[in-house]
Amino acid sequence: MRKLSPWSAAWPAVLFLLTGCGGHGRLETNADPTSLVLDDTSRTLYVACEGAQTVEAWDLGRRSKTAEASAGRGPLRLVLGQGQDKLYVLDSGSRSLLVLQRPALKAVGRLRLPDAPSALWDETDTRSLWVACAETNRLLPFAGLNPLPAIETGQEPRDLAREAGKDFLWVADRQSNDVAVVKLSEGQVVKRVAVWPNPLRLLLPADGNRLLVLCEGRDAVPAQSRVQVVDTLYQSAGLSWPAGKDARDFALGPDGRRLYVLTADRLLVQAADTGALLAELKVGRDPRALAIAPDESLACVSCREDQEVLLIKLTPSKWLP
Image (cartoon, rainbow, N blue to C red):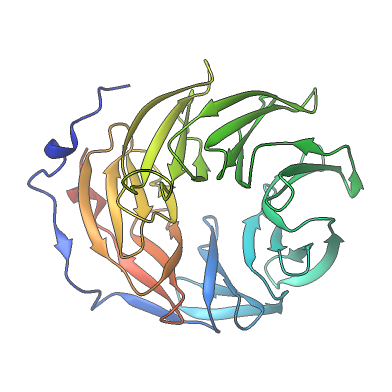
């Protein structure tokens, strides 16, 4: 891993700020679009609309809605199943997990939960599910639909990540300011890695041995968001770099070189290994979630106050780390 560049050096000549979003596409959705997931094999974008209590499917190529399904009263979070045939809707309002069959978004099941779900990881090969519950600080494992003993995590688990073929599941605990390491074969937390305050989202780059943690930093003094790097081999925190203020979501480009961080008013483009700032792109009002097209030509941002998903044209060839 290369040495972290100072933030003062993160303003290269290619840095620019778009003063508006004119010329970019928009998907006019139902009320209050929040969570997004993108099927990168078919370029279908799924949008959870909490105000309308619906989930929508959009063909990004045609810019047209292809399906719609009823959902709960929210807050809602979407998770695409590892087998690509199912879309999970985490419905905190009704404390349940709705399973939709793709691409028609036909409801094929609903799992009632004892707590409000906040994150999910599924394992298609073993038909296993792990559901994090922020209300009670627990991880609920399932073998098929059969519940297994709950696992105590940290305070307010908000996201999950797992390395393929590994026995560890990583849990971002927003209020305890750590990432819990769950050993699945033992069904317990074996280590907690302290990170920057308020971890929200987790990413595992394909190059291995590191976990990227998006930390909101609301409890930091002064308040500042950061991306924290965790070494998954030694299970220890390493470098971190600034990521604006009030960060909400992040995503990696397909080649793993650029990291896109969504904040309250802009989209930051950063070098994925150093955090060097490459560009800033203006977004709409009250952005909530982010998805990057498989060819990195487009960023999809759900803008709740604007009642739309903003489609921002990307030019990654100009943003070389």
